[in-house]
Image 1 (cartoon, rainbow, N blue to C red):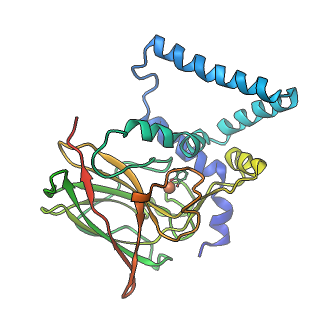
Image 2: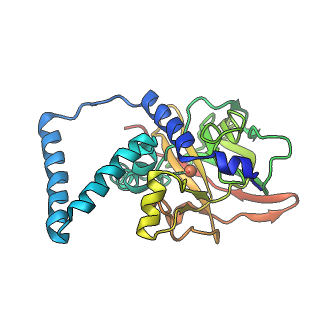
Length: 283
Ligand code: MBD
Ligand code: FE
């Protein structure tokens, strides 16, 4: 259960500001996009907008509402959240369409590099009496021929039993439910954690207000985030979901794929599930 205090304090402004700061640290503006490509991409985006204006006879009141909303997305620090929820899934599909190994999906706004390094038989950092159903998540990392990849890195991060991420909601220890697990010589890992709760887009920020105005729901199904990597292989960014869990068929971020749904089995003292990763050779 989440306390009333942390529910009230996990505001759009607190999570959005952190997500914007984290993104600025990793992003290099500009990249290597040529002038021609910038011109083509921006022209087509604007032409699509103009087409919608004509087709729906957009009013000045609606145009002003759009302007206010765009200004508010920035003020709330919600560009990472908005874009990762509504756009990243298509970028990920295109980027990984030729992948042979395990499926990936979107990264989302709440990854932080540098989580504590743990051995192959790991318990994620968590608070005394961390609420939630215990989960043992185990598996093996292999290449396309089935050979184990010893020493593979499994970075894992996920929300707590209230749906909150450490570093993006107040009063949670810095690396809570985040770790960098190093697989053993046979590529195997065992990770003890708790099952995350579904994630609700903050209702007090620009993204949540848009969702409410459109009459949509604001939920992502419960999920584990992972980055799996090894020297000489392509890194996979992925998420795993839980069969039968709420919103698994209606993710607001459109990031669920059938291959990414786990079937945990009840065991003594919690749930257990296995999942193996297959990495492509580095290109
Ligand atoms: C999340 O937890 C998430 O994973 C994504 C993609 C967007 C918003 C919140
Ligand atoms: Fe998430």
